[in-house]
Length: 333
Image 1 (cartoon, rainbow, N blue to C red):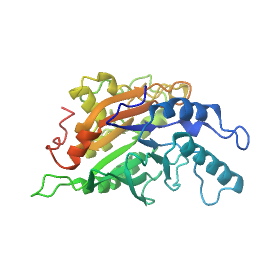
Image 2: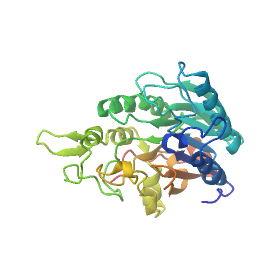
Image 3: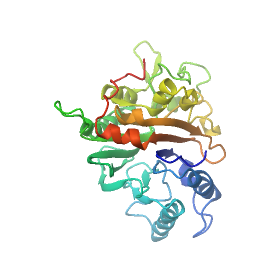
């Protein structure tokens, strides 16, 4: 995929498996990391990148001096390679922290807020803006939902709705108080209606990873299983929308709904490919989407790269409330 055309703001979500792995030796980055950043991300010239497995780019306070130095080297290399400003969330219980890279020539950059409670892996939450719409902040977050705990994912989802709550327009003014973009590894499936990838049959004999089934599905009273879709349901209730669904329904880009994970050997017995890496955008800014692509990362990662292009002009109009937001669930049914 080439660099975005003029007038386009490009967003990307990369879930590079375990950050490409540890250093080969001190100061020498692994080939997977170098390829992902230098050959995949750099040519895209993205304006905002969410990162969801910064395994070796962030450390806990009790890390060794060698681990802290290695993380500092890698994070500096990421920012230098892409010429972007970087933000990292603090470590939680999970070992694959989140981060964000922002192009300062595209956005005004506000504060970072650390959301350390509740989340197994805290999201990276940074407030951005457009110079043409200084009164409307863009609340952005890169998140990585709990892989093992559906109940915790529900709590994490409700915490993310605190960011969505800032979007609401005043009754006398159709302009949104804020725009909101949440991108991440949901670790659960989307609502199945309208999806290109079929829902998983969790009762199939091909499901052999029974622990994984408990992580991703709910056992019903009759003994059957239902995919966890809580994040999708709550966000659609709150007026958020999936840009891939917008691209598929309004721009005839059906491949925007391609699976993003479930291809690796480690996923055998887990139900097959699935679309768990997703974006969520408010009802105004999702209408600025011009293209959504899923970039194959086979050989580099167990997740594919998600790219979302926005019209800057349409996004400015969205910030000024020049048109009505999409209604909740409008892109699903």
